[in-house]
Length: 160
Image (cartoon, rainbow, N blue to C red; front, side, top):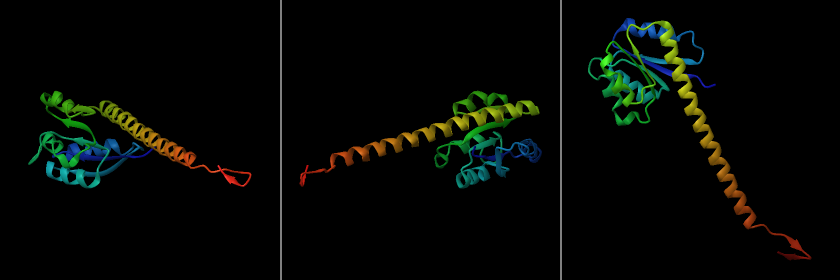
């Protein structure tokens, strides 16, 4: 299984540190960076294209939704919002968040969110792999059909 490239974005150092600590023992997660504000998140998401982002909503300069609204980040990674504000939950799912962790959350709830994200990422990767296989089979079938249209055979010294 491919490792899930993960970015942590939160303006609170202790909140970032807690997420990082909870992610450390998970063997299928690779932490690719930490960001303390929306501008850093935008830059790192554009440069590193993470699979999964733990994203705070209320941050200096750009909030989490403003970061996600940027066209240059399309297609968006999978998002788990981590915030102290419950009023943004519906909006979070409008931007297709995988989960919404309300601070303070416990370790078990955090792990359920990570597992849910892993399942969604695996489904997407399976779908992409399936589509690649279909494309290869179609290309092979097309080549085979063309090859059969130009098949030559010799019979009694004549080309048929």
